[in-house]
Image 1 (tube, rainbow, N blue to C red):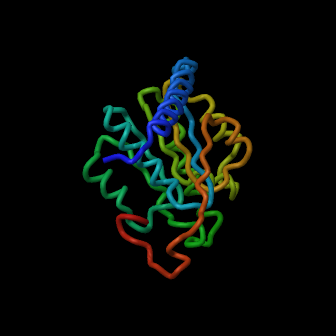
Image 2 (cartoon, one colour):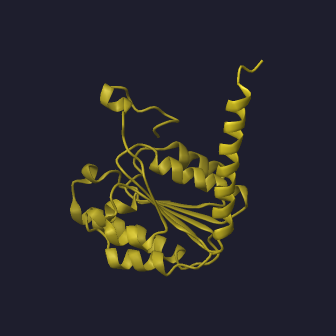
Image 3 (cartoon, rainbow, N blue to C red):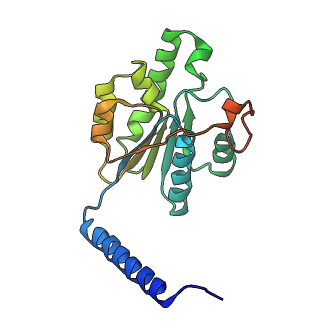
Length: 204
């Protein structure tokens, strides 16, 4: 049994009607049909997880997906296991060197980054891909392993119907300028800082 008064219920209904009208107007105003470029950045956890959520969404529509992971690769991850075993239709590639502090060799890192970019760039030129994920790409730009100009141009000049998701902290103003959506994940609290170990199925 509800204890809402008639006046409160009427006020709520009026507010929801206004909200619906605003949402409908925004949907009506969005008339451009093309792929989007999304940058998921910030110091919080969840950037790559969000990108892989969109991979699942795209696969639900039988879209062609390419996933390139920069940095990661030494530690087996749940997404790698799932994509390799359950989603062979996804073109999946990892740079495989682990984090930059693992190699401690700039030349090795640059060579690996350029080899990985040589696989990613053709995907950004192939209109058969509906979605391309460039996971942790921003670090390759921050450390100057890849040419920022070349990367930004490839994202800008990709096929019109293709969407691309870039993840990683930072990214720089040029990358932020060329993408359509920038979302920042902010760390408020993290279990690791309390001494809690990374959890399989949650953190990797």
